[in-house]
Length: 342
Image (cartoon, rainbow, N blue to C red):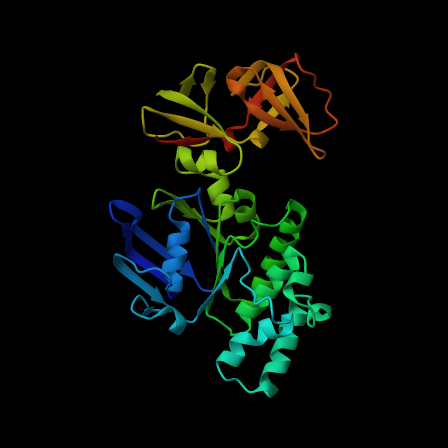
């Protein structure tokens, strides 16, 4: 298979610190791929090595099958969008967007229609003659995107571009980013620590920790089938408890459970998301727990409920009449139970 980007045994050391430790990564053509993880996990270091802003200590990196580690940053067919926007404050937005083309000595007769296309694509036409400080944060970020895309890079790198925006604006820009990527059919590589953002916009996600990629997959695979405790805890909300296999059952201090697939290990953990737990009027045939409600939070489209047993967190419809102190039966849906080997 021809990959857009391929990293093999990539290392980056800062003295004794291993920022990247034997990273293998393959990104398919046309993907919006996200590097997700907490601060210090190595995601930004990896992005900067792809951009040519950092030098790898060892390993190989290929762009469309060609090695690029020895190519300087200004010669690589990639562009980077930073959190800080990095716009020129003394230039109008039109000129900010045109800057890259003018640096390449593109004739003005060719620049004008390309800038107009970017302005239209990112809904910036009426802001062309304004300066960056006359725009909102979201508008400045769109100008930054237009400036990066106008030079038609093979990969657009995005280093936490939405983290400085307020929550509502961030959601709007996420949706616009995804629509833009699908329209252009270009490779975008996004770095973020925001799990919801990663799940929303990505074709695939690589979850990183301590310079390693722990799991790589689609948002559904990462969320519904985490391969380790860290991924389960880092992505969304997860109930995790220790279990021990006894024949065709998994025993815990909360009771006995039957997962969808029985693991081969003797001891491990059971993971279930809040939406995988259902309220029942009576004791379920299997995977049931009776417990007291200790917390309830209304979230508009659902209620968050916490049970005394293991602090299990579940979600119910907003109209369900459940009060703190109620004793209820719940079922942990078999198809939602995931086993992990710690």
